Amino acid sequence: MVRSRRVALPFLLSLSLVLAATGCFEDDPVKVKEKDPIDWPDLTDRDDVAKTIVLCYENPTDNEAMTRFEGLLHSQYFFAFDPEDVNPGDPVLLTRAEDIIVTQWLFENHTELYLSIYPADGGAWDQLAELYGEPCDGCWSGRREYMISYQQTDESIRLMSTPGSAAVTIIVAPDESDSNKWVLRALFDEYNN
Image (tube, rainbow, N blue to C red; front, side, top):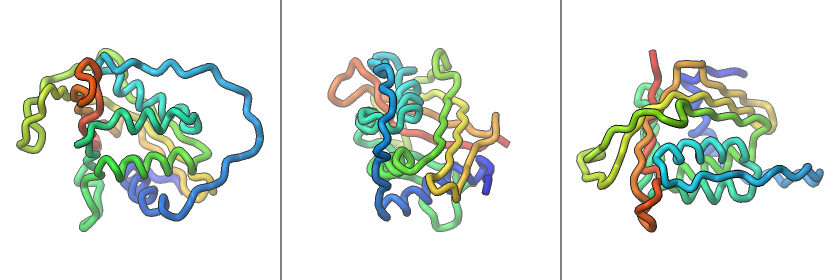
């Protein structure tokens, strides 16, 4: 079954959250040729946040990917769905803990996983003084388009976004433990009509 991006991301994240508790597939015992080490960004530039997210999705089986993803999320991080993509009664926000569970499940239960965020480098950033009426010290906001594709391990679900239809507002803030580095404070998903 192929679904459009309009329902893909909320459906994928909701499904993943539900299925994450059902268990994990065991690692494939087949040895894979060693890859070159990943050149992880040092997070000293705001654009490093989007680059790190993409690298995590490009390398979901790398032991460090999930650690990097978790370390990228501010302690008050949340993911906000486009309200038009959410069924009545379903949550509009994913907490930090929920997004970690969903992402780990995606990394462990895919045969295809692709994410691109563009422009990943050099997009515009606007200073953001507050978030939902609360001060957001040192926060910056940038809107980026993205493409995502996912195939579940058992091949029962295939989801992909339509080019040009998906965008996300990325909110970055200084890392709470190192103010010279940036972390992800929030993501706001949106659908382009």
